[in-house]
Length: 274
Image 1 (cartoon, rainbow, N blue to C red):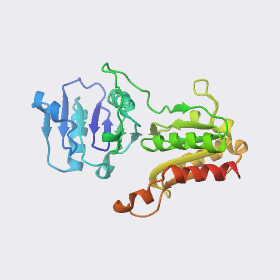
Image 2 (cartoon, rainbow, N blue to C red):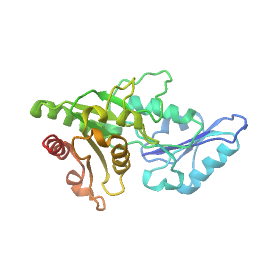
Image 3 (cartoon, rainbow, N blue to C red):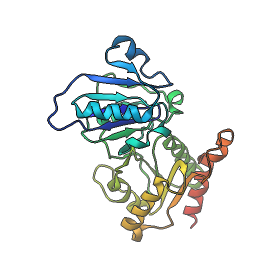
Image 4 (cartoon, rainbow, N blue to C red):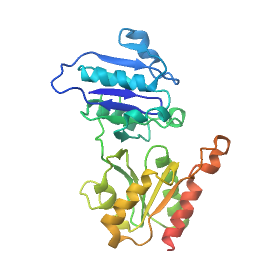
């Protein structure tokens, strides 16, 4: 298998069955200097490529087919569409390391999105030893009884604030779930009873999903559809999606576009009063 890593995402492609394991090649083309220290030590395995995302991805696929494990960095996630398959989004440094190592070890193609705002905003003590966080397994960060909040990446931190506001101002107990892997996503944790994670929408009867992408065609729609099918008789209010607007991203008006804690909190109030 090989891993393609991007400033904004990473992708893995399974190596050919039976192929011998070879040295890891790191195909470098990034703007935020993730591999600066690596390239100083192993110039034979870490090298620049032409600025051609399809070529970088294609090189990685070819390396995997030949039995290598390749990590290809792409400058921005916007250009990685030819490589989509399994999608992972960490909320912080600890999750980034564990999920990335799981992607590298996995025999299926993976894309690992790195929210760029977390490069400078997220600070944690990350274990130096190797560890893995299971793919396609959500994490319940806070248990609650009145409403389920689901997000991934940066938006998890927003909903953590919303959960605190809901408890303080409304007396509402929110269960917060970090999806971590959005394709394939963990339906058991969000929809049903699960021994490890407790109860989610079946227990709370209400679901709010939030992400920065536009609301139309966003992954929240897929989650909403599945929960509607699995938990219809348990719902106490319509499922709420608090997402970006259906417009091109307005850079200078980013604060108005982003689904911040105030927009999410208003949605919580509407659901509780439904």
